[in-house]
Image (cartoon, rainbow, N blue to C red):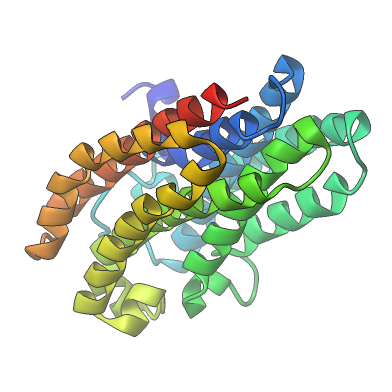
Length: 288
């Protein structure tokens, strides 16, 4: 693999829908046609926060030994493909890019975005970094729902309308649930290894079967949000079509898929999230 390929793999492109979808949905939930510059800026913020947290997790888990013999995408530190210091620098550089774009966005809209952005960066680093990483305490899913659901989606609407709307909050819920489904898949795959190294994710705390139920519920509840949203913008019901991509990963998880099969589930869940986000965004945009 080339140097570029190594670092791209470390950035974990399969997780990028978690950053892209809330920006699409939140921008489409605005009360007027979105302003292009602001959409691009908020997308840069979200995407580089996602890339930053991926590198930060790689670094922190790598130096702790939590990624040794792990199934799934290549880890830069654990595999020896990159030095820990280089991975940490890549994480910090990603956060700097997100911060610069966020500061410019705050100047254009509201300085209240500054503390929110700072909190997002701290949360990204402390997921597996710092003395008391919350990802090791079963709180990862909660923070993902808040930051990659509520904050990212509502924030994307706010930078357009400069107000928080009921539609934006409502649209952020299914987005957050599907982001949680991605993390649940990841943690379900890593459950055996995480339990051995003391990484007490929610999957480790709940156990295998409840975690599988949680995965299915996240997807089902995201679809059940659509009837409420349709009261505000009826065309959002088009997002129901994304259920077609949910059948296979739900079946695999329900039948007890493990290891590499859950890597396939992770990819399928990312595709589901992207299709749901695209269709929901189209439905929201039709009603502007």
